Image (cartoon, rainbow, N blue to C red; front, side):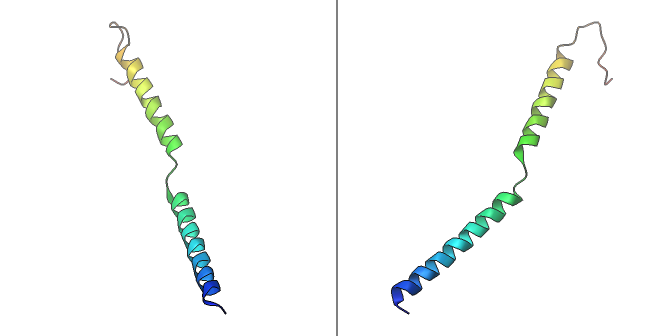
Length: 61
């Protein structure tokens, strides 16, 4: 086998290994969409509680 083809095969193997590592890293990340929606829902709830009329008691007290 020629040295160039050996280097090319080695390079291809390294690229495949990097792609596999990247795929595994992407799968291991927790989904941020749910966390973002939950955070904004809590902000909205807090704003509703803070802007409640003065004569009413908050439901959490």
